Image 1 (cartoon, one colour):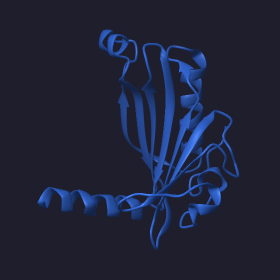
Image 2 (cartoon, rainbow, N blue to C red):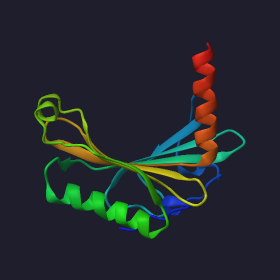
Image 3 (cartoon, helix red, strand yellow):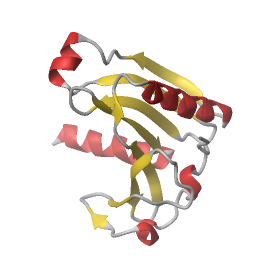
Image 4 (cartoon, rainbow, N blue to C red):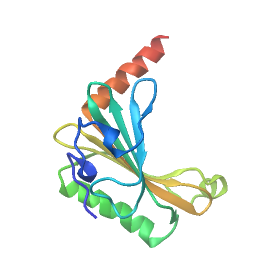
Length: 163
């Protein structure tokens, strides 16, 4: 399972996302949800592509199919993705070792496991997370955000805090 650093899943930063599905216009950006990209990942269930007007594709999120939260493949797929990202040049900037078998997690069924954050030489930030969906069901979430997206997001948060 290989994940490319600069252009995940065979798509390019800055491109128009309209060719990948129905574009939904939101307040400050547009998004497309699809289950197919040029270089599909075999464990992917859904991709969300985010485009900022005039900037093109700036964010990609992949969510996997559901796993057993305590299954071997859930843990091994997470580590395979992480290792692939490291091999493609990502440098770790944060890691949180969440525990999916804690009493609170089992009761609530809505908590996070491991969270790994890294950045590449172009400033693309990747966040890899294990998330619960129910008491024994979980999925992996993989998010790529360009520096352009991070800057726009920072400006929007500042604007909201002033309001």
